[in-house]
Each structure stands twice: as C-alpha cells, then as structure tokens.
Amino acid sequence: MRNGTRLSFSSSNNRSRSGARRQSNKGGRNQVFDPSLLVKKGLPDKPKTEYVPVHKFSDFKVNNRIQQNILAKGYKNPTPIQDQAIPHILEGKDVVGVANTGTGKTAAFLIPLIDKVLNNNSSRVLIITPTRELAIQVHDELRIFSNGLRLFSTLCIGGLSINNQIDNLRRRPHFIIGTPGRLNDLNERKQLDYATFSTIVLDEVDRMLDMGFIHEVRHIIDRLPQVRHSLFFSATTTESVKSIMQAFLRDPVFIMIKSSPTAENVDQDVIKTNGRGKIEVLHDLLIKEGFDKVLVFGRTKWGMEKLSKELNGRGFKVASIHGDKSQAQRQRALKQFRDNHVQALLATDVASRGLDIDDVTHVINFDLPQTYEDYVHRIGRTGRADKTGIALTFV
Image (tube, rainbow, N blue to C red; front, side, top):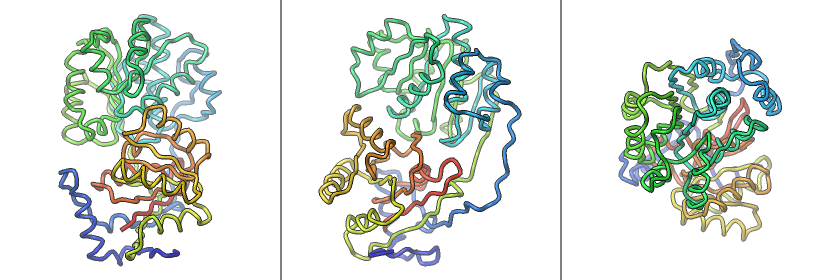
C-alpha cells in the first residue's frame, strides 16, 4: 500500500496498542480494546447456511395493496427476521427482535402494523428511534409500504420545525416516528399524549442507551397505556437493555437473528501511518482504484469538517455529516453519498448505526473509535447483503 503499511495480525505493535488504549479512554468510557481485533481477513468464500423462509410474502394475511407495495419494493423472499416476526406481530403479540442492522427489521414491523391500522383506523403507532437519520429512514419505508392507503404519518425529530410537527400532530396521524428528546419535548408541551398510542415500537434500543437516552426512554414507558402492543428491537442484550425490556414488554415472543460480532465478509486491517500525516495517507487511498464509495469516521465534529474542506480543496468529491449540521444539510449529504454524487462521506459516530447505505466499498477509521463496540457499528456499514467490504483503521 503506497505510503502506508498494511499490518498483519502478528505485526500489531506496542505503539499501536498504546494508541488504541489512549483513544478508547476518551469520553470517560474506560473501555479498552486490543488493536489486533482490528485485523481480520474477511471470509466471503466461507460456505453459508442458506436460510429457507417458512413463509412467502404472499402467505402473510395483509391488505392486497400492501402486498402490491411489497412487490413494487422488489422484495422476493422474507429475511429471517421478517419471516419469523411478521406472523407474531399480525397476531398482536409483543415481540423482542434481536437482530443486527441491515437484516430487514424495519419492514418486519412496518408491514404488519400498516395492516393493523387499516383494520382499525383508530389505532395509533409510535415508533421511537435513537437518531434522526434512522427515523427518516423508517418514515421513508413507511411511505413505500403504505403507498395508496391514505394513512397519515409525521416525523418528530430535532433539526426540523417543532411548530410544523405540532400542526401535524393536531391531525392525529396514524404513525408518529421520532427520537426520544423531541418526543418528550412535545409531550411536555402537551402536544403529544403517550397514553393515546395502542402500539409502541422501540427500535435500536441498545443504541438509544449508548447515546444516553435511558432516562428519556423510561419517561416514555412510564406514560404509556397499560394495555398496549409493544415491539422491541436491539442488536445486543446488555443488562441495561434487559432492564428496559422487562419494564416495556408483556410475555413477549423472543426472536434471535444474530450473525458474527463483525461481518464475516469484511476484510479488516490497520494502516500504520509511520509518522506521515493521516490526510496524506487518506489522499493516497482515495486515488486508488476500487475506493469508490468510502465512509470515513472521525472522532470530532470539528475534525471531520476540517478534513472535508481539505479534501474538497484537493479536488475530491466529499460530504460530511455530524451534529453541527442542520437536518437539511445532513440529509443532503446522505443523499449525495447514496446517489454516488460524492466519493466519500465523512462522519462522526452519529452515522455509524442504523443507516442503510448500499454498496459502501470501504470504511476508514481516520480516528480510532472509543470502544470496540463503536468499531463494530462503524464497519457494519460495509460488507452488507453478502457483498465483500473493507475496513481500514489508521494507527
């Protein structure tokens, strides 16, 4: 690799190890991971056990227009989480779905819940997500699956006008999709009453807790009606996740769809910069063949914005997404990246989880993540849908 040395598993040295320790302790999280964990050969050729779904989409007893929308979306066979969760949700059972991002869980709860609302127009569904981007993604999928069905929905997230959201709430939408902070803000303003929802979905619960939303989530749960239909999705089941689960659910059906801790078809390696500036090493990577759709992760908003300006000045087409960007700016950057109008998207960890971005060729950790868990979430943006991806970490 030009002007950067790729390290094998055995060549992770003391210098890189101490660097990883220093970085992982930032933010007071005091979790340490061994940098040798960042080096792993992907196994795209490893024989896979083919999942054979029990159901076809046509087997699910849902409205014909929903079936047409599923076909228009291009779905053929249900994924494991869809195959196993949809029948239970249609029966009105509480469900815990433990599944990684990218397994199709959004459709797993939207398809039966749209049918539920069609069968009872007074039903109202509240879907809570950890990030604005995931809320928007869920809302977009809802629109696809409910096309032509005259169902009303609204987003309740920060970065958008709260007054417009209040106006939309007065129309009593069937579906409300939001983040904990904005939802509680609307609740405190007496514009959103949690007791009016018959169905609640908590999505990416472990990420919500990672982001410090445990008090906001408990605030919501305490104000929900006792009789409700509750759906709970998480990639992990830590003790704090289990605590929320116990407070939220009643006799749930457990569905475990787990893959390996990091994608088996992601080739993971480290780049030792050998004293060179990291931007020079990144420059040399981005001009290489095959670096077509690259996610670059950094630790700070300021650092990613500075890097974005520097790369643009060098003639690269890049965009950035972080907490200082307005919601419109963040969505524009994501659209540019999805539509291949930019080569690289520079992001803080706000973008590391819950986003479906097709065909990401590389994830580059420009700055070391704070914990190994953060690393797993970052590299999960590539190597999706049985495609091979590459994750590189600068040390």
